[in-house]
Image (cartoon, rainbow, N blue to C red):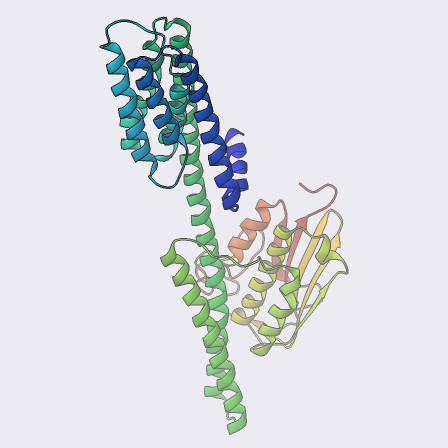
Length: 403
């Protein structure tokens, strides 16, 4: 919760240079004002130790202001060196005096927080204790250290513990972000794997059809154009995959959903049997994005399965509608002969053709869809349809009673 609050204020200042400058000036004004009031109070009886403490307070307060130049490490080293030098000077002075140093100690606490949060571990391990001890030593200079020493000792301990806790939370957050990015890259690789497989399959189908059929010049030209288009799209997908894996960070696009089903069907129709799509009215606006993306996955994988494992199919019907307790996604063809691999490697739940022997899907085909649907609390089956042909049907929980 504390990290979220700090992140909120950091984002508030991040995009507004004027606000960052104003915050720095305000911090500098508060610290310098505190030291100035302290110095003016003690200036009634000027002494060397008091002048040294006042000068150290001014310098430490200026170092505590988070300017981009000089860097934090330089400012922290300077503040720690000045503070310790003045402490040693006061300790070797002739007699105890009222010198205070409250503003300087607060500035050292500000620097301590920045050092423990932002500097590398090795530098923080050296500078952190140096600043904390300097903060504790500042009130010890006074003739009556007492309560102020205890107060700043407790503050130094609390600030150190709190800063280290925030540092650990930030490190965990970085690890979590890296894990999320790795998962995104893996998911994108799976998505592009299916996309490339779809286009390459279309190229193979077109090429085989051209090699076994006598076609005229115009028909051959049209077939070659379709093959070239599919090849270009496949190469583009592979380039995106290689770029993502090289850059180490997924540059994602909006997740495909119900709105993209018609585009998917048109792409499939260009190299396969015609596809008709029916989406229940207003379902596109009501269905959550994750369920819409899963529905898109199911349709795309089912169409790819039709292309790979069925011959003689003249039409494919895609339907998405609301049913009791969920949403039904149904992809059915009008018949045709299933390929030899279609019946092999069936998985629990009735999904055929998804095993290693069926198109060498490597676990990223219907098996992956069944796992995704099951994780959402739904069901996925595939087999002979009620009206003939082959059917893939999934029911995703949605609405009352879902989950």
